[in-house]
Amino acid sequence: MRVFFDSNVWIAYLTQRNETEFKSVNQLINLVKDGKIIPYTSNIVFLEVFFVLVSLYKFNKLTVGKDLTSLFDLRNLIVVEKTDTRKAFEYCQQFQIKLADAFIATQIPEKVTLSTFDKEFKKLAFLESATPSEIITRLNRN
Image 1: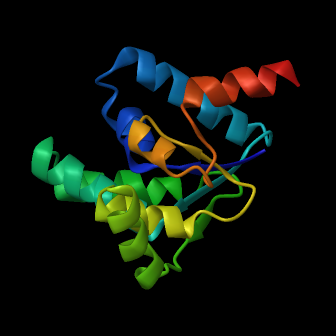
Image 2: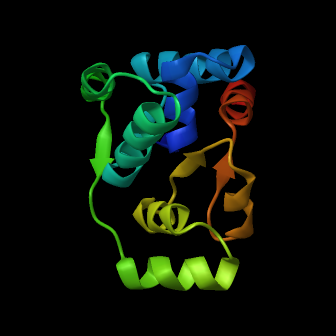
């Protein structure tokens, strides 16, 4: 299974502030380590995670940088760096979502499930999104 990790998934993993969310993301990461999930994320996601951890959570910039850099070692991680700016602005206006989420939506390859806690992505019917727990449940059924 191919899974795109959204910002809030990484934040839940790195902060460990919500035990339930952390446990489900940790299980997802373990499935990546076992080769059962091919992980995707993007430069926009890393930008959001860095901003939230430093600005809102007041984490140290160097520590956050090291934590994010360590994610590059995750088995088979694919970091998407291409965006469709015009399409992102269309999504933002058409679906009334945050611009950052619209940019992320343009980065998710076909047949890749978005792992997120953000219900706003449900507005994008063309995009398959699920919480980490939902993804784990799907994998356990197969």
